[in-house]
Image 1 (cartoon, one colour):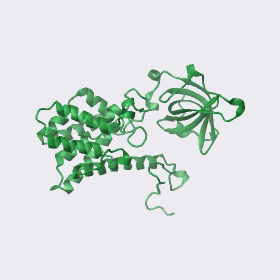
Image 2 (cartoon, one colour):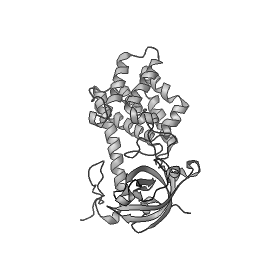
Image 3 (cartoon, one colour):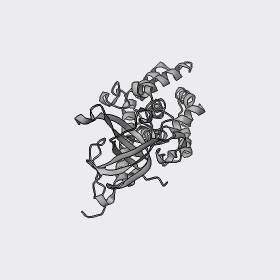
Image 4 (cartoon, helix red, strand yellow):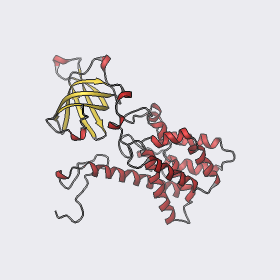
Length: 324
């Protein structure tokens, strides 16, 4: 059977297709005659998008579904504050036998090309201690394989296979330009090394076997910022005579690259290198979000995209030169 893509579903459509479950929550019925029973609230997804769903009579315990399951569903698309699939039938599928390309977006950039760009950036680091540290990480084939396949996020930005590598290279490029603007204040080698290493904790934050880029327990409980600092501390401990002041600079850059405590950083940037890295990271993430919203927009629906809750705005997308 041909795969129905979520992005193509319209209200009134009959649905028979494979989806991955991003969210699965049991909710109790409020009706007295169904006391003790529950229904499922779901978020379903594939590479084309996501949609809310409800199942009034879910499978019993032996067939219960959870996040990251790939399932076959039957149902219809209703209208409840927008499209919502009313699921009538659902069964789990063997994740080893499904076509992951339906569910896992892949970076548009060629990974081999991106790896070559990363190696070139590392080769350009002249500081011998920073180069030792980078080689200790990226000279490990298994580490490099995982890093090149990992997403940069689950949903918000660069959420695709190869997304972490793509995002890292964007941050490196932005940092290189910032360093050129302030040659007397910014040490290029230090800023670029921080850019390359800032998100390494994400290789342990997301499950490598997850179709929906689900978090590991460690990712949920510790988070990639703290994990990244631990990874750097452990690697530096294996490198003889690594300068303490350089280690402190790198630690501060990793811990502050989200910029604010309310965004997950335990401290705010207090060096020019940390401050520059934070802004480069933010620009890469936000512009990727912006482009994703623009690309999902249907031109027939007008000049404005739908409201995006992460960016907290709609986006004006009328091509330049067109009259209103």
